[in-house]
Length: 244
Image (cartoon, rainbow, N blue to C red; front, side):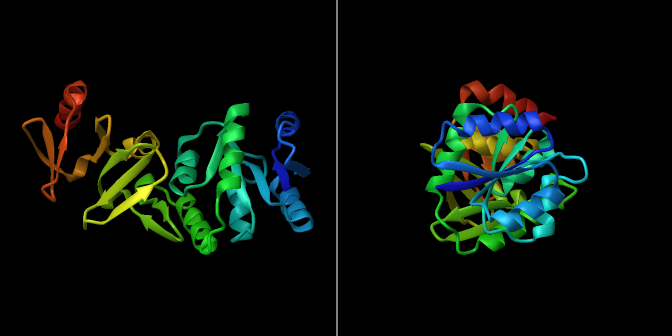
């Protein structure tokens, strides 16, 4: 059984999500809260396994609530309207979110990820990095949370040279030659990193524009001498981006 708490200032949103969750009998909604003060009280009383947390609320955001808690022994799925900076902070921190209005299939996927997630020994460290990310004024200062096995790493976007697709996984390469494997797709990383100057040069490659030294025979050449192929379909787009 998954004990859940819904935090949202809109009663209609809470009712809508509660109704969606009735399709998942393993989830029991133990309570609701309309603001962060109520949420803090309900958390202390109920100790849920899973918190569905609205971001924008009168009297304080969902981020404010987690900042007050400092650490939390439950998983969080954010429910929010699209606001890029908030979404970036959540994505960079490898946390889960659902865009409003919540879609049944997306809720099902989020619950599946929750059930498959292994407890992290360094959960507190991940949470502290999330709080650091939401406290940044500049997206470039956020760090990506990358988990491999039982180890977690925090990598600045500026330290990445390029990312390559490997089926539904992504390899992330750094300036000092390290390589990380992530269980996210390259499209996920494109959504996160394109606003920070990363270019999709091929269906299987995403490159940090600042790491490119020049073009050569249908490839971008990086500062570490790595050559990444440019697809014919992407060539004009890449040339235009580099000329800008």
